[in-house]
Image 1 (cartoon, rainbow over the protein chains, first blue to last red):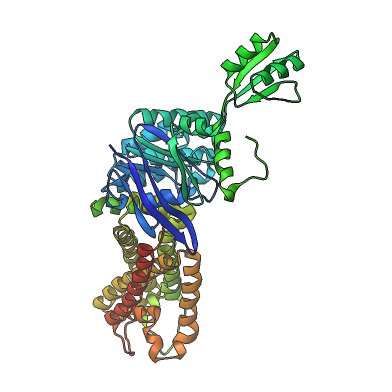
Image 2: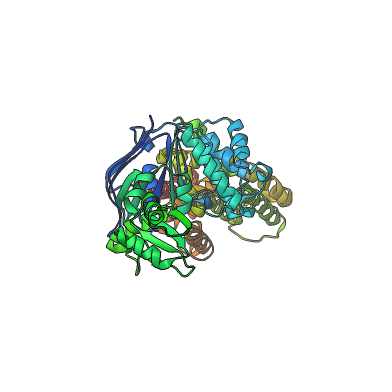
Length: 306
Length: 241
């Protein structure tokens, strides 16, 4: 079992607390989405886990050991922090060969990850000629180089084309299915919803949520039902009779808040209201996330849309 | 984690960067060319020193050595590449030591080759004027010049780690070396003898009359380089990457 354990981690830059008494665990076998607005401390936390930045207090361990105590760490932890980390004048292949040599990884792994990330055909070109998407793929190739049990990716879908986004989704799911520990930061909600099983949400360096994604959404977003009818008056009367309120949209459809589709369907058919469309509104991670951050004064948006 | 893989990785880094290999090539080319030119130029200087004349390519050559030492370290700061390097090798002291070992070996090797070529080229031009040079003096000049280049490269590497910037290092060291050598150096005595470039270049003179001999001079340069490396290593080990 190789988990990432963050315990009471605090990091200050000058007087600003980038990470504030953060405690959470990233477990293997699932994809953990790392969410939070820009500047919430996601990247800082990752750097602290890798021993790159020094914490003011607290500790981060991987598999129970500090990262800096790992011998040949690339065999245990693979990380993508920054797509620009590869020197522009090196070829992708040389960039990976350098990393492989430092951790005694066989040269064959270089070719394997180049194939896996789809940049093998351009591997002998200089990195400065790469698009952002290709550099992201190279960064991911570097993270996978040591076949690590723990994979940590900071905004991996940045700059990827639609094909690349589908690819990374599949890759993350596969890595988790293989029993690896996968932590992926993102600020894209729909993207995160498509691959994450579990969520860790930060705001101002503090932990706001650490729970399964489904639970997070269900706890935050009230169920809603969407209805279309040819008899608006009948609809309103029938709903009012069951203690529900409906609001009409410009396209003529109605939304019933705090309601389950089973109850509304039964109520309307009982009242003989003609139904043209009846659907449960799918609660999204975005709605749940906005609800959470809106309760934090720091991020309160001028208007709430949930 | 043992040292050898880190050393291999750092050597690969130098070999896979055209700018670094190019700088070493430039070190060879400018030093040899300047020495060859000096060999054929007319001289009537009473203080004529045939060994220094033959190795006068040191002036542009040391700029290349400084550039190499600075670039070896500054290439890590491109786009925060150092984070990836230190994630691969979290023992920062070991990582820096491996990098310096590679930089020193590359500079010393190139320096030996360069100094030998420069001496041969210059002697062809100097002819009888260089006849007074003993074999021992010539070996001392060649090894000494290679060691001098190496120490200047390490001085630059240390400063670059300290400033976290190659530009800052070059804009400090290069004017310093040029100004000290060509403006103050010839006029003032005493304290300027202990500046890293003046002290280190005693070894490539046939005769010396200051406080420092050939090897004590190099020792003084080594102290400068060592101080810069300690300061750079300290910043590297204490700070956030």
